[in-house]
Length: 257
Image 1 (cartoon, one colour):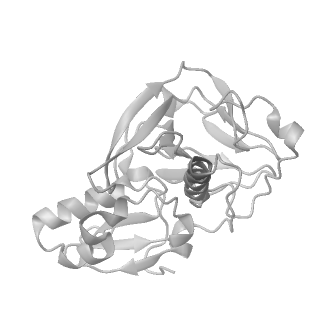
Image 2: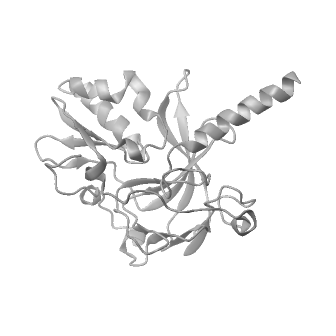
């Protein structure tokens, strides 16, 4: 847990004059055992993970953009036949969407890894298994060599690509987080493999609250579960990656037998 910084939201580095950010009703609400209700006309698009030849994530590629709507409901159970939107299937399957996340703020969850050029904070509880952190031998080793300008730039890029905001770099001079600048928007994360559907990515400091009205900490990068099986709802915990693995094993068994 970090005690030397009072708060972290990422808001101070997300400066945009967009009409979206000016709206007062911009937010995401988790409904009880149901979908995410998105209000405020937030843009919605697919965001695809681009990997190297070894499968290590390198960058993001913008995918399909959906028509702008003032309000829409995104599937949370993972069973909708009209993804990414909710089609009411959760009422038929008995989906249990109980929120089990602690509700703690980022700096209450994070550990600090100091570096010579920048500091890194890491909140493993927020991990969505996007794996950008695996690049160049791992960001935890990389931060030790951030007195080198090129390495520092790479480390900042890697941390900023983490969609869940688990990893944050900090300016040692100002003590402020180094965050990518986002216009408030919602992205649907997809892996490089077909059907590898990742979390819902809230960008740019979008407020979101629980089904009981609890206001989660507003952060620049947040990932929400959309497979319905996270053990840290409403946050994604990477469980969707296990689903893809199981699918591959089943496909292999079918080929053999």
